Image 1 (cartoon, rainbow over the protein chains, first blue to last red):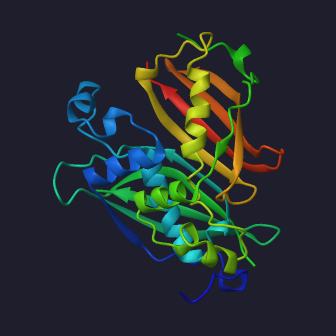
Image 2: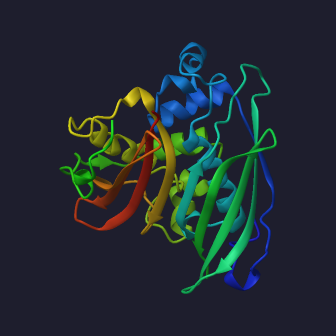
Length: 142
Length: 146
């Protein structure tokens, strides 16, 4: 690590390193246990298809957590993330195979705010489709 | 069934205390695939200026989701849980959640409206320490599909 990103290092348009994450069914089971969200649409194909989904889908909060990783990996300081919001626009189907689903996170500094804060806008896609919209993080940098 | 606007502003009694454990934070960090030592190693966290290991930014959901569910359990809200999906999520962190925190969640209905037959309900969960220090505000918009 080269130390946390400093306010002086960023400008509007600064791009975060693009991150590619892979989600398998095993990851969903682990996330269910860690988060306490045991909704069966995240682990049971029968229930997922009964409610009209294409199959088992990832927890929206799991996808949000991956978007958060892209931000905190970049800043090097998770405590710098003071606001974080997303809209769950489209589900991420996770096939029952070893490859799972891919989620790509791109981010750009979109605005410099007051008090050392900067706004990062995130583009989060899976299978070429945007899965989160209005995904934004506000960071307080030194 | 349309949501009653009178619900906006309704607040529920504070939750029981949730004590944040180091092992729970590490379990959550592993589940999201994040290897950061700040989530596992108290020495690394102290070197970064924290009193103990801190939690990843979305860890709060492990505490607040259940707190938000009190709204759906309210008989006057009349939402069928099986139709509910998570529409939006927002966190405002006043400081990182850390191991040893004894957190209390207080849930308030921030918004309730019906759009094209879908019920949209926004639940705000204020997480504070037992002593009243503000830690995190987690806002969940839930959608009950028509």
